[in-house]
Length: 209
Image 1 (cartoon, rainbow, N blue to C red):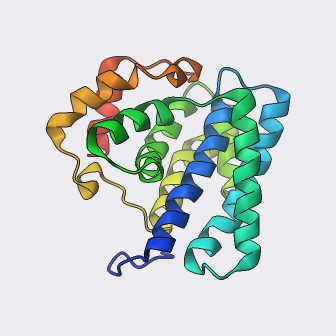
Image 2 (image 1 turned 180 degrees about the horizontal axis):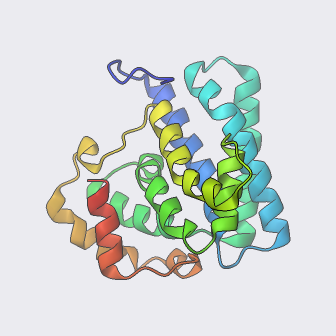
């Protein structure tokens, strides 16, 4: 792992990791979005590739200027992408999670993103396969690559030292139904390629508790 979980990350490392995974999520969710178009896809793909190339380095060494510039470019491209294609389930749930439990936005997105990718891969396997490729997974069979997209995201989240369980950020289990319910108040939910039920959102939250 890039960051030893037994060591305490510095505040700049935490901020770099959290903001960086959010930039990746902007690319991923735009790529999956029902509003995705060739232009937003092109921006999202380049954003994901750039973030994948530089995020680990930027977290590991904050003085790595090339990595910092790369992450700035990746974040910009991802922002341009979602301004055209919009976001989805991770940001819808993430908004509710942050609102109820005061979990910072990037940390919330890092917690949710692997399971959201897994959820959406079932209806957009071709896009999930591309996401896996951009994160460094090797292979030539779409169905195999699609299955590896979520684990690749989860591995990256862990490598950069972000929490992987809701309990790790002091989220109370009793709050999960309220978070699930309020996720549907977000306008971003309607752009997700697979529309979840309330029970499916609650199950997703329970899986990462």
